[in-house]
Image (tube, rainbow, N blue to C red; front, side, top):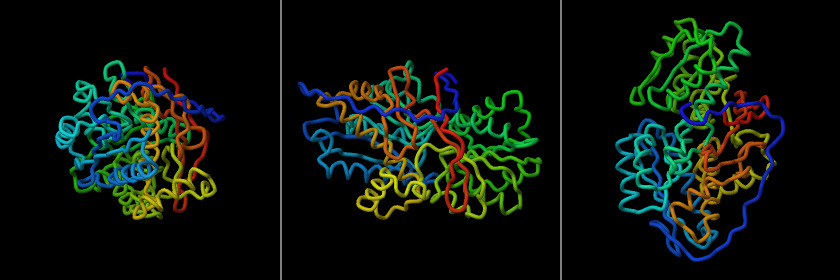
Length: 406
């Protein structure tokens, strides 16, 4: 990794939760996007186009801020959340972000989605010194405070997730012959680089590596190529639409590999169900949030609160769409960041608060997983747990794997 690379290690004990620090309110200080009564936040998301399944995330965030505003806002200020459709197209993202920063004059952006889309605005946001917070992509580049102090990630990074799958394959699949399907962009390459690092001297076990473009109609031909190469293990690096297509095609051609699926496509509603539950039994992925389709959490207070929020503020959404959980958790972190700013709603203070969490418990994260950041650590979530698809939901196994800087 170009910046601080983390290696995951098994840990049996849960992290200790530390409460929020007390706030002191003094003289009010504002940058663009903040007043006595309002805070403006910008956001881009693909509500249309080939990655429109991710539109669920944006709609969930809108519903979250509706709840916050009904409760009086943040420190008495209502949130004006402006979300724009970029269609998962980087040039469109640039256009939308310029509109948000230069015309709408937002205080910050929050959870803008897509690796390529965020890459397109990465330098701009840092040049403008506008907080580019908790981006909805796990690319490792978002944890580089030295060169990009205004951009911070959120979810576990793709590179390390790829390492995990590689090591699990080597430890559990006899005579593994691996086929890899990869979306041909920075997001796919980050997973692929991590996967190769995890394989190390066993990288020759990859018998076929094929790519696809986000604009391709299907990935059927690529799946046929991987099977023909003799692979008995399949690593599926694809966004929801193509991930579901790939697993359906695997079943259609009666290929029965051990399957690994990247976390960004682990939604039961938008991926596993469309692929066909019968076709995805045994698929393995990594998780860091609770899945509403898992009955394990039925009596958990976080899940009860989440479902109550869904019923009141997001009633048309489906509980099986994991994007709702993602939007809810990341917005909780954004709300706490703003709350800690008190009356100093400057862009510099927003970044300062975002970089000062210590084992903060965000609702709906798996037990034992908390948020920690610092001025030198821009990776808020640093732990995952493996899970396997069984029936119509995910079943977790093994220990929580925590990350350490190395």
